[in-house]
Image 1: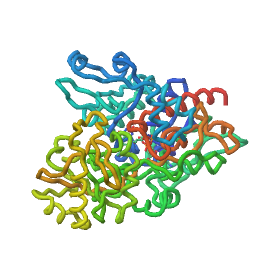
Image 2 (image 1 turned 120 degrees about the vertical axis):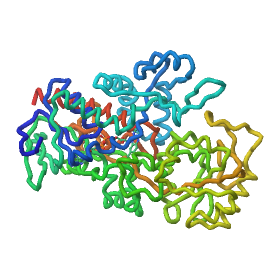
Image 3 (image 1 turned 120 degrees about the horizontal axis):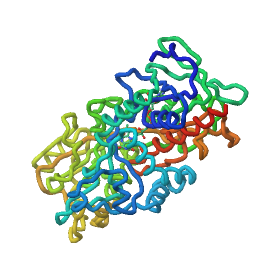
Image 4 (image 1 turned 60 degrees about the horizontal axis):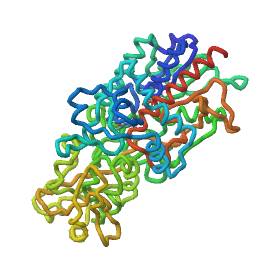
Length: 498
Ligand SMILES: Cc1cc2nc3c(=O)[nH]c(=O)nc-3n(C[C@H](O)[C@H](O)[C@H](O)COP(=O)(O)OP(=O)(O)OC[C@H]3O[C@@H](n4cnc5c(N)ncnc54)[C@H](O)[C@@H]3O)c2cc1C
């Protein structure tokens, strides 16, 4: 549908990622007639949601809880140990990782609504699968999950995003592409629509309520430098190029309260030769997440972080920043043959920056930009420090660390002595920004006085207050779905009264 053909709508939803489409579906369920405006062309639709691996996080106390989301075969029921992930676990992970800054109301909504929301998504045709890869290991004939995360959106973003669009189409909700929301229509203290632009023309779309779900500001180099700090203008962006902070700005322009960690973002180790923005063919393949089994070295040939501080789920979203702070903003992850079997699939893609060598000296010479002599000293000192008497196990925090190093490796330390040696070049890959607007428990955007702005709702990345410093893996999609559904339902309720 073309923007110029749009008449008035009950609800305008801005954006067409996971949060926005969940909001539109929920608004429709609640009896309203939403319309979706998306700035990207149809060929690039889906926002960051298209790029996701698809991991997701929710609480389960029993196998019955697991089966509410995952359809399991009798064989899986017999041979797989999913463990449990309790309400307390999810709260504790959110608290611990955000340094206890996460908004308690929003966190409670997320934790308590994650599973019911995924079950609701199933009714819209969204499929899930056990996340065997990267989250489980076979031990004594039984598959054991670790890290509290067992589930993936089936097929990742390349399947999830089209499935959401199919659900929206089946619900009879129109989506306008190349329709960029520019500002909110704000009259007599109420939001009454948006001004959007398409084909160089501005159109005012009047509505009873607006849901903003149009991402953070990760794609905007100027805002990255301004809020995340110097050098972040140069960081690579893992996903869409369309999340430029426009929705946040529109809300701030009418007096919305800013919230959350504006100088914070989700950032991972990402192939140093990846393009500026995400590649729809490669998806999240540029990430390099097996670093807990590596040592990481910088241009000085030195280690700079505890690679094994915790499970990957709890460190990967902040270690991109650590790499960003290194000289030249790059690092190499170094592995030897002993741990080759633990490398995730993304290490085997065609578009990878990798060097391989039969000796550690040969590898040193191949590490572009690295002080080779210092690197060899680092490896020698590290090898001496590994506590080899402690058994190695990738599925628990095994405590097999180092002793006496200035920067310890706390778990999963293995000597680097068995050829062939491999190293992978990474830089900082920005996923999404943490700062955004403040919402209430109904998904209403609040003003600087802490009161709801009538008619304005927000969801997804552009909500501030959930994530600070770090992030438990698999929380982005589910929080987008939970708060998208909430915003759509609340907007529909409000539109009946407005
Ligand atoms: C490579 C990668 C891997 C990831 N893997 C995972 C994972 O495995 N699990 C997980 O939980 N999370 C993951 N995430 C995070 C996840 O993508 C996000 O949390 C989630 O998809 C964000 O959804 P959203 O709807 O808020 O934003 P988006 O999906 O980005 O949607 C925002 C939409 O708004 C549109 N838009 C922007 N400005 C305007 C405007 N002015 N007018 C109209 N439209 C506009 C954009 O074009 C976009 O379509 C990953 C992210 C990336 C980039």
